[in-house]
Image 1 (cartoon, rainbow, N blue to C red):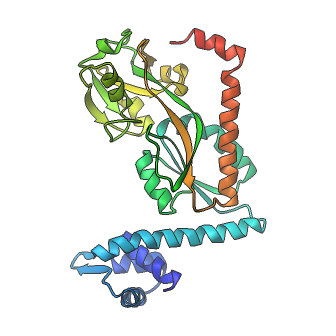
Image 2: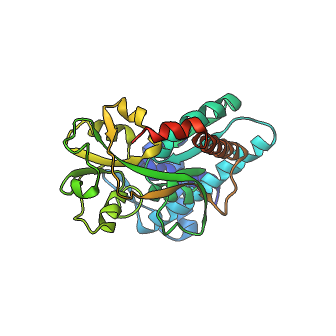
Image 3: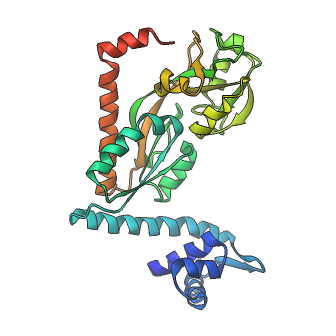
Length: 315
């Protein structure tokens, strides 16, 4: 089994046809057909099913694709790592980030990292942590920055706590309930959830209502893209639980306010997540270092007398 065969198979699986896969690999269709046929003979299973509309993965092909991606991605990372150890400052760093951390940490981190390593391509994927874990496991991502549920995550990942993701209730400044001080006053209102689950990060407002034995909020929209959420909240009927770290001034620029809720609101640790069994490349390690430094800087800023004074005058 050769790496090129795995890459041929991945290209066909991703494109859904022999012709498109061959084009992506810059080889002829007969050549990639032969490559996959030899792979199937070696594995003694059919990986693809040919149809009039292209090819689809067989049951075996679907299982093998996950392994093939991991091997191909590890080979790419190994090549990048050797080149970087020899002094090259190129390569790719792939990061997953949920909306809050992406806006709180990444702008400053990217600016410093790009100044230090201008030839490194940084690829950022949005989304929520279950999808990030899948990509980390497959070797597609180097790291993810995300809140995690209270029960934690699988042991094959390192989960390094960065900061507490405190929550606030946000609405348009003309929302009829924008002066509410308790969650009970918000019973019956409609919400934007930032995740697909019914507990934990992304659905923490449901946990807050459960803790007070209140009827669960009505979910109108599920969306994990912060920019879209800020747009959705222009609807004067919607509420959303967002990270306090976004800041009142940033929200005000979108016509939004933080409700002065006095009830306890959920907080989850935002963590740096990466695979325990696969070391980062030097450039990925450098990016992780910049993330840690930014968190340390923000912690010191929050402890400053000026920041504490401003916090006393904010909702």
